[in-house]
Amino acid sequence: MSVTFLKRSIWQRILGISATDKPGDPGGWRYGAGTLFIDLARVPELTRPGGAVRFEGQGLPQRVLVVLDEDGQYRAFKNRCTHLGHRRLDYVPGTGTVQCCSLNKSTYTFDGQKIHGPAPRPIMPYNVELSGDQLSVKLV
Ligand code: FES
Image (cartoon, rainbow, N blue to C red; front, side, top):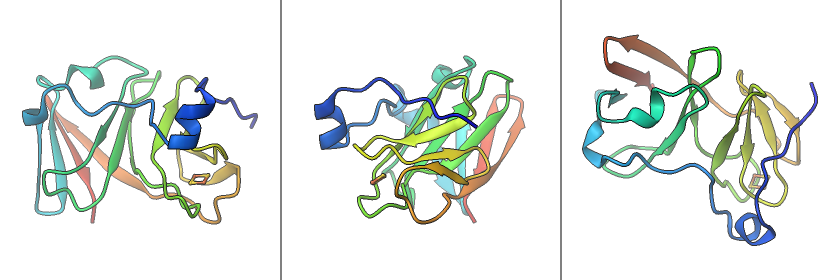
């Protein structure tokens, strides 16, 4: 599998500035009982194939990256590169990969395996379920 790098400036990479935003509506999601619940009616960023959103704070025990890939499949990952900077990840559209926002660009497949960069371990994908407009990401 070849690796595609997101176009980011050197400063964005040095500072670890993720290309992926938080949801525009902070009330469009909640965490409870080990699950991240996302109301897609309020998080339209995740209704367009190729869309991605990062969820963090608001009691969430870890950062989570959620992606709607071009095949219409939802994917979710612990949003923490396993390299020592532990920086955030971004979806690389059309590639089936997510990539660390740092200079070293560790890159992982959708099943979490590293295919590029210095990261020593896989990342953790989460199970995702869609029911109507509600997306549930099980973190435990
Ligand atoms: S923190 Fe991800 S490659 Fe260094």
